[in-house]
Amino acid sequence: RAKSNGRGQYSFYDAQTDESLQSRRAMIRDLRDALKTDGLSLNFQPLFDADGTTLTGYEALARWTHPRHGAVSPMVFIPLAEEAGLIEELGAWVLNRACLEAVTWPATVDLSVNLSAAQFRGDLVGTVKGCLATSGLPASRLHLEITESLLINNTDAVLRTLHGLTGLGVRIAMDDFGTGYSSLAYLWRFPFDKLKIDRAFTQNLEQDPKVDLIVKSIISLAHSMGIRVNAEGVETPQQLARLQSHGCDELQGYLLGRPSAANLLDHAHARHDAQPPVAPRAT
Ligand code: C2E
Ligand code: MG
Ligand code: MG
Ligand code: MG
Image 1 (cartoon, rainbow, N blue to C red):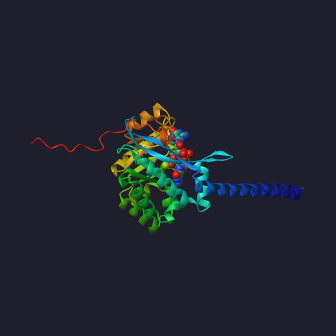
Image 2: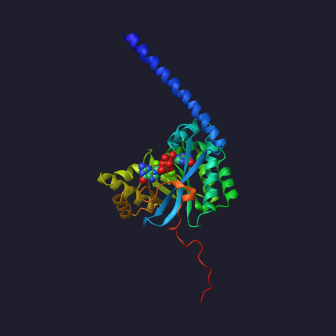
């Protein structure tokens, strides 16, 4: 009885595995097609100054609408691309597309692009350099977001690449800060310009006084090291107010702006001090 039960479970499990493996293979095939046929797109989510109204930049977010399954989350297709060896190609496509878009924005508006750890295995510095050259986007306007997972196996090669990137003049941001481990150790080992506090913290700011204290401390620590702080996932005016009172430098979330297609972006609240006039001095 136990045996047949076990066998039944086993074969059921097996069939499921087989099915998900097959659908996985099919999805990888479709993703490969999408890459070849311009089937991916980008959305851009606005980032705001501490005042919550001045536009500082946009984060590019990859989108895939599957011909039959509809919208597939990047949380699904990015890992799929990594597994299938497509992430270098996908990552380069995102960088290129996003840079070409960003040059059409006001000069005070920056671009943030997410990087997968797997992209560090290829010639990332060369790819980024190429995208800047092709688009004409000034390096200082490009922020590359990496996650702590990249730094877990922090090899010399990763460090060299990070320094190669900062050498180009681009900025490095630590994304989803606080969700990985050994977070604090990385702060002094890598040349970060910005730290993005994960949405999980923002969401628990109001309910949990400890979270509020942690966020306040992270901001103060980052500032003491000359690192700017972004808070992700701002959804309520209360969260916004807490983050502002803690001195957070940049804010992002559905309360302030949702990701949207490039042609729908509204730059009306960009800063206007991009090119200070070179007026002759009176004296
Ligand atoms: P992320 O880099 O942390 O991006 C922020 C995610 O939070 C985005 O989800 C965004 O739509 C969502 N978000 C923004 N504000 C709010 C809010 O107020 N509330 C809530 N609930 N969510 C908010 P999305 O676009 O689904 O992307 C998920 C993740 O996929 C990204 O997290 C990033 O890790 C990855 N990803 C997206 N595009 C790319 C890409 O081009 N390359 C790589 N390597 N990863 C990407
Ligand atoms: Mg990000
Ligand atoms: Mg993030
Ligand atoms: Mg996140």
